[in-house]
Length: 268
Image (tube, rainbow, N blue to C red; front, side, top):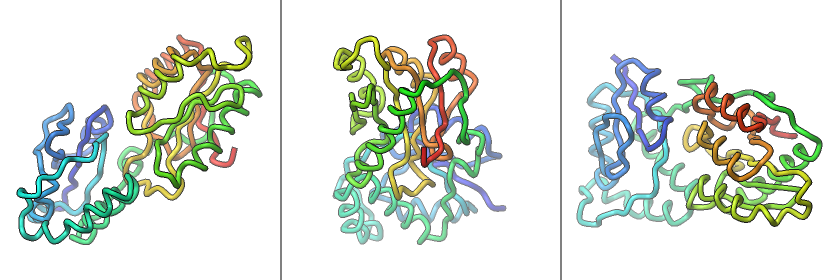
């Protein structure tokens, strides 16, 4: 019988995906244990791991959750995976997008199909619309400016988020992640030219050309709490391109904090 395997990372996404599937295999890269039981594997023994999946009747794989680049041990490679070392190292040195695409290619070359989280749980990826709150003209201008910034920085393989207030970029997501970006924005809130003007928008979107089967940007209730702490007016994201976890709780926190949640048209 055909089975699906979940490559689980950290955060709330992997448990949500596993709960939606019937009897999935759950694996995690060693050193990045998720909050659910998972069998670890090492990148240095990737080919034997892929063989195990196939021998277990797995035909599809879904990646869910956050994983940082692992440190590789040259002495731990098995002979077959060692043949992939130049390809893996070149990909890792070329940025996150290239590394992820290379991983997907290797999985598919072994005979496994990689599916997206949106195929498993389409309701996690909101379509266009305002989920709660209201947006002012200034908020919409800031959100449009933020979207333009991410389109411009996407080819540089930086992060998937930015904060814009009164047309100015207060923060850009990089390797430390979303929480660090929002904390930075909070500490530099006084840079807004008009203290009584627009408070600013936190915006998320996939990178241009990103393979959307893996590493989609993710928001959740904690994102709302962090945006509120940064004094922002709301959160916007590219409709159809961002995962929203625990939607009801995220909306409740936004309502309590007076924030809007806006799933923007990609061309807005």
